[in-house]
Image 1: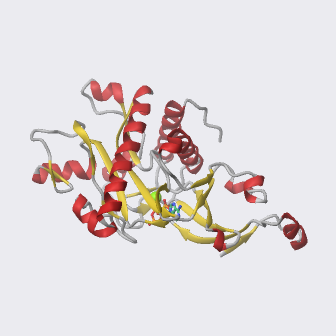
Image 2: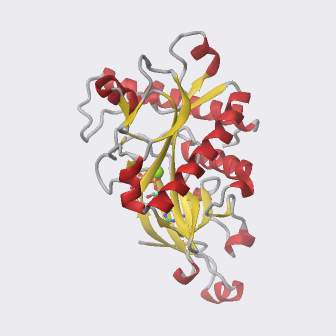
Image 3: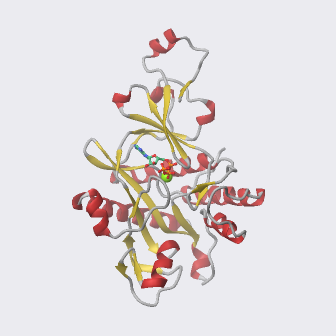
Length: 310
Ligand SMILES: Nc1ncnc2c1ncn2[C@@H]1O[C@H](COP(=O)(O)OP(=O)(O)OP(=O)(O)O)[C@@H](O)[C@H]1O
Ligand SMILES: [Mg+2]
């Protein structure tokens, strides 16, 4: 599929501008669409975050208004905050006419990032600061997390003595599978595995500290890395409510179930209605949609200190 924008411009106008924005959709993920920008040899992609939401690897029929914009703003904040400390794929987090040689289509405004195309590593780099989710389930069964032995007597919501690097496979379809560090090293090579482990822990440490200043806890999060010009670079999104579990710190400290600024309320609702996690998903009540939207905006505003402008 190819999308030609600014149809009112003639091809001569495009030629004059040198770099016509001719977008070719090459991948549509659960949330993001990737377009090749211009000449494929330049290896530039336009990554556009939609308002789609998935849970248990199924995309819901309803969209969450503005979600793609919040995710893009949040990722932009973090890429900027991490700066040169972590090599990344960003060319322009908020691409302008100057970056693109053309105006962005209106419907992509606030959702698009211009990135370098990477050879994505086929693992997901998860860091866990707190025991939750699939790690909690495994721990309750076997006292391990991704095969690693963990201190006895932990319960859900407890902090690990040190953040853990707990990779998973990146399934083309279906569910990712939690794996050990050694298994990840067999997939991407020992040197690359060690590198992404160290970078993942570093990003988590920086992000978790910043979030704590805003009174929220990043309990766990997932990163994706790729190879650009032979070097490992942070790609995809970073430290967003789609890729992380984010909790209200004061409520966790008080010993209660903390408010979750992530997809957990959606997962909880889907489980409460007894959905079997196979398509088609149940349709989401407006209250569930709005609650998710408000949480995403709230956590973006708290961590970034910026106002969300839709
Ligand atoms: N710089 C990059 N170069 C190439 N691919 C990238 C880059 N950054 C992110 N990606 C890929 O773009 C896709 C983003 O789409 P999205 O986040 O919707 O995917 P997903 O649903 O999580 O997974 P999938 O794409 O497997 O469906 C991911 O497959 C991700 O690996
Ligand atoms: Mg993704």
